[in-house]
Amino acid sequence: MTDKYRPKEIEAKWQKRWEETRLYHTPDDVKRPYFFLTMFPYPSGDLHIGHWYAYTPSDARARYMRMKGYDVMFPIGFDAFGLPAENAAIKHKIHPYQWTMRNIDRMRRQLRSMGAMFDWEREVVTCQPEYYRWTQWFFLQFYKHGLAYRTRSAVDWCPQCNTTLAREQVWGEDRHCERCGTPVVKKELEQWYLRITKYAEELLRHDGLNWPERVITMQRNWIGKSEGAELVFRSEQGDDIVVFTTRPDTVYGATFMVLAPEHPLVAKLTTPEQRAAVEAYVESASRQTEIVRLAAEKEKTGVFTGAYAINPATGARIPIWIADYVLMGYGTGAIMAVPAHDERDFSFARKHGLPVPVVIRPPDWNGEELQAAYTGEGPMVNSGPFDGMNSAEGIKAVTAYLAEKGLGKPAVTYRLRDWLISRQRYWGAPIPIVYCEKCGTVPVPEDQLPVLLPEDAEFLPTGESPLKYHEGFRRTTCPQCGGPAERETDTMDTFICSSWYQMRYTSPHYDKGPFDPQAAKVWLPVQQYTGGIEHACMHLLYTRFFTKACRDMGLLDHDEPMLNL
Image 1 (cartoon, one colour):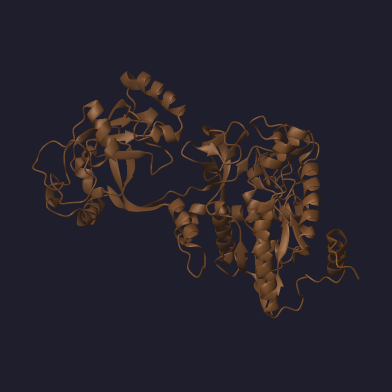
Image 2: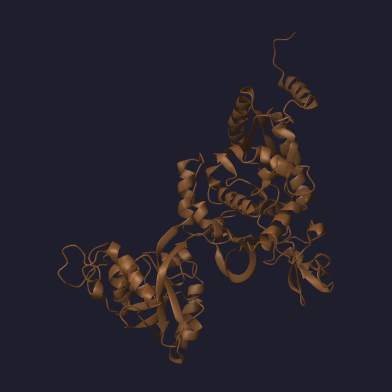
């Protein structure tokens, strides 16, 4: 008997014993299920003290719940697809799969050395075909139910990573890539999206969740609900220009309109006399970041299109301008400009000599010219039949008045945009779609999944998907007509993989679906989830969306993925 503690001998001995006796195996006969989940790591190569900081309290809590008599499931796995592994593989001149699996082996040994009560028999690795087969299966279900679609649009592009980014992956006031810090630019591309906006209103609610108020607030702010009205300003050419405003009570003060330079009506509305100036301005605006365009101190530049629209409330003929302080990604990409009651409109009107009529009376105002925009509420003035009405009443009354004329309606908008999932990189789950000249866009049949990543693809970033240049992958046959077809060559955002991994943990070896429905009923939703605040507006929002969509598709019987956070 020795009084010295020899960790290499003692810990290895007992860890081996625990594994042989399946000490931390999730019970098969479950009476009091308790699913404790901590966010699985990205296989970057080495664990650091932050992993211990996150996992040790989680392990202690899981053990505590087990001691209280609960049948605890405490699984672990690896979030293995994504840009960091691909970039590291390029740097070290090794295949991403080899790099990733080598790191997983190392991290697995490190995690085991912790002596935590992870159930290793339930390990999932998202880059393995047996996992991403079901990631692709989920995509097909979303497509079947109208929740996945492809469209051409201006997207955020990282010129360093050479790929698109979801809006949630663009960080900071300087709009940089969350992975590498490079300033993000705009680019027009055909991309795949998931309709997360369909669930915007439900995602605002956190009923029954014991989550930190900070996370709930971050999600609500990100979704960004605004209530107001959509108003129609008809151009003299007959085109309806729809604007969203939270202040329809100020419409009588709209003396001009402003379109985003990217607005689809700009080219149509611009007169021949103004075309050269407008095209030059559009080109200049395209080279600026959104943060520069929105900066309060930036001079309010713009160009008159030569066209006019009719104010639906006053019947007045008002000029249509384009200006870079209006963005296509916010609202409708068009605004009614009310310079007396909006700071940016006020600056623009002063610079370009446009009228600034007051339609909401500021306190102590005696009819003098405003020296700054008044953005508060108050009695309506110079507003026809609504004079004297307060702003709150006026918002409803003006909306109803214009609705009767077919020129307005109450509306709600959200800051949240649909989830851009296309990535022009190699290391991700291929999107299971083929394109046929005869049949169009065709989903890969479920019995042909997984669509495997080719191991011999050249994965250096070029700005286009590496799979596009792999003839053996790209060229295929149409599942419908048997004719020649081409595969989709973009891969999926890695956040798709982590949006459903908690479901897979319930039955990781099940091969008839992404999870065993009976096991899911026993274990889901997750009772306790732990992880970092940085995931509040990406992973935690995406997995909530996934769960709600799966519920509506009849795959799950609950509303939220994790009850306690």
